[in-house]
Image (cartoon, rainbow, N blue to C red; front, side, top):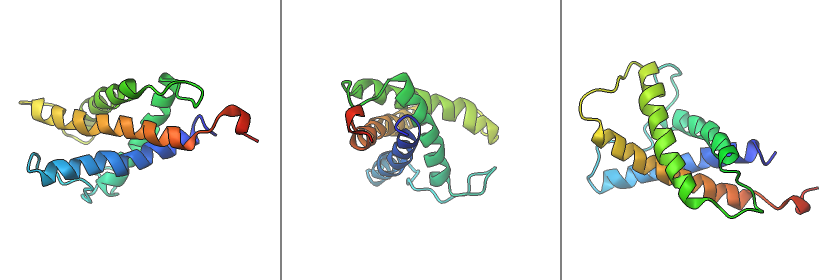
Length: 142
């Protein structure tokens, strides 16, 4: 259960409480046009974008927990989680998800990549926060 369900739930919650909140704060500061918690329909599925992003993020959190070997017995990989979220989730969005939706990388990508890196890096850190909060040492399991 700690290897799939808890990282999945952690990634989902981190997308809502960390990634989308970061986008909302960047919007409130006047740095980006996107507001966070976008209710625009996610093209192929028709659900709100922030829910679709949370589901994708949850799936990536399972991979992150496995790659970084997150467990309560080990030291928390804070920097690695930050970098994983920033690089992997941003690259997946720009080069996999967006092209599947008909949005192709073009022009000056730096603003889009920097906002994506910032929001997704905070997601990686937040997912690790939730994972560490939810996981318990192996000897306590029953």
